[in-house]
Length: 175
Image (cartoon, rainbow, N blue to C red; front, side, top):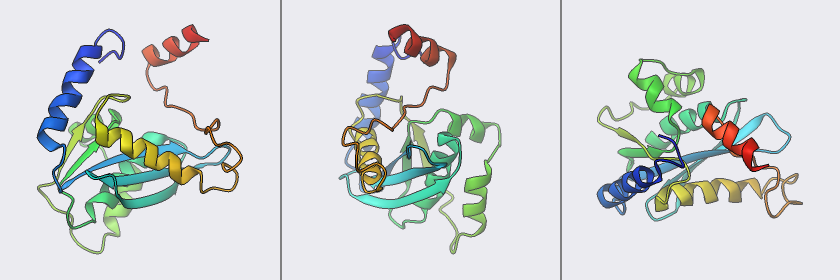
């Protein structure tokens, strides 16, 4: 979905997800952000009330792999049955039967079996879904605990993901 031309679809999908899962106690939201100047990324999972369930720092170059690795960590929490993420790469890979190395390692070393009936839902990035926005803010707040990020209260070192041609050309068009 194109973020500018299909803004109404973005908003209607976010509203539908909020209507279905908004305050359900078994729902969690995941997001990942980059440390500035480091290889590691921060992945965070929050519940529908905004409380942090899990937090992980994973040494990986690609944000979508870190967010993908955050999902099995979130599913280790006993109350989680639905995971909502803003990464399109994760559901696309799952449909094709692919699993990146990070979640594969996490699942291989899981101390208990993960629920087979857990759901994963995609929400558009930068949508108005409250839980998704809270997950993004929580991940950025954990970056502030890093000593190198403490000097930048506005998080100048945090980069947004530019994954598609449309996002990249739109970014350079605005500069």
